[in-house]
Length: 159
Image (cartoon, rainbow, N blue to C red; front, side, top):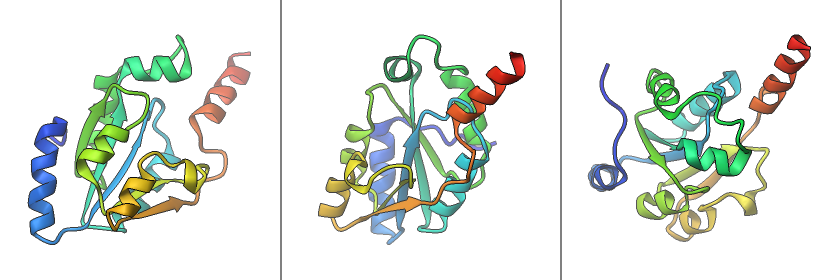
């Protein structure tokens, strides 16, 4: 398998090359702690919006700060291995902050994609992407497909 995981500094250079080639760069991000079909749906729809899909992934410490001590369920290395196998994703980058603002500022993608559970004005980096001439796209969600709902179902199952 080709390595899709890059440092932000390397990805900035790749982004510059893609821009020169006239390629449309799409970006999304998340924790992806329990990868499910809803995530794959967002990746598939995101990839349709451009030539290259970059996905930024919260590292373990940032997830713990956001979601509490019981998370992440899967460590970063395992999450990246699974994400790397998804054909729609071209590049992966990790970040340690609670939001991908710094990554978005550095890459300024042409399209920023999130699930429609986000309010457009709350999408981190949306303002910067739009000011640079890009767009924010909210992809419809798959009903019942969220990490929280899956964890609730597992909790009921374990009883």
